[in-house]
Length: 474
Image (cartoon, rainbow, N blue to C red):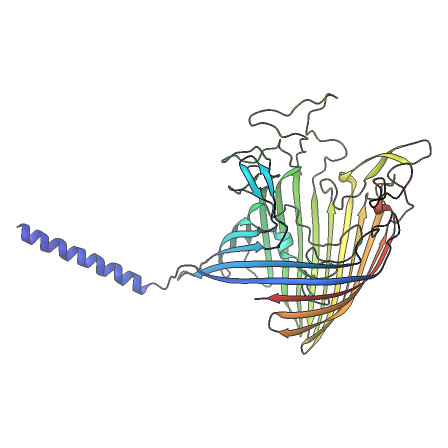
């Protein structure tokens, strides 16, 4: 009996093993396969002409400079037999910054500029449910934007509308793809394309993100001294100005005869909660200030919800490429450009002595128009970026907008796949759109540079630059 039982058990085990082997050999599913990619941009500029007299934006600034921008991508994906693709994406910002340490609640953290820029997982099936993402990346409005990749280089990482490689000297910067939530941890949905149309949506609880390691990256990611601990959800009482970021985007892609067209439009908004001057201990309420107000309470000058509108179009016709992108931002916390703000108090001479950022009344409008023509390995291009920034000059009229124009013309030569060299000439024109109002009674140049009471946002600026840039992508 025992021998028969053992024989039966052995037969069953062999059958199970055979069945397992059969199941493994018949499936087409494969684990995620990783691959490596990246890009390296670098540029050199010489300001052959710029306004650099005492009190102007370029005073005592080096007329030449170098910049670089280095990203490494780690990508992995697999497509299962049911048609669903699972993947992971991580982008490392690998600048070589001077190293150092900063104090944290847990010890010390390196201040080297090497950081994770994006990191998320996704599931998608383009023919059925679309795509779901979870992690740290730009909101769908910014991620969906088009109209920004023509011009001299065909890449927004370099150009008159770039936050990566950008030479100007102006006190402000033009950029039509503002990242309102700073890539906070979010969930996003991208619909399937139906008759050329698509719809996207994303939600971010707070721009802090949901990271569980590093200084200040838990609960509220607001700096290396944040007093939050593992497991806590975001707090309204710890130095963040807005929460609950949500974003919507839509667009259409198709062809009209020989012309290829792509159009997108998007909207992002957050709920403003205020910011505390001092961090609030866990479980405690905000402090009562000497004037009787509650610390981190909103005021009439900063209580509007920040929001961003964007729309762009890209047109390709043979060797020609035309792009246009427009963005309008409203009530950005603490202002978008760091200007003086609205003058609120004046002395006997009529000069301002106190200012406030009325961010709920400020509107910034920016657009970028770019055109290129490609013949063989040579791309000829031109680009015009304009920004109109309200409330930064210190003028009593908070709606007066300073205007920043950046114009580029040049050419790019493709050395080989993924390797380009570009040469450009650029003109920057900054107009405060009003008379100069110093931040104080008078302006006096200091021995070490521009005096503290100088207001470069209220002075005109003009520069001409010769720029050489190169890019490597793999």
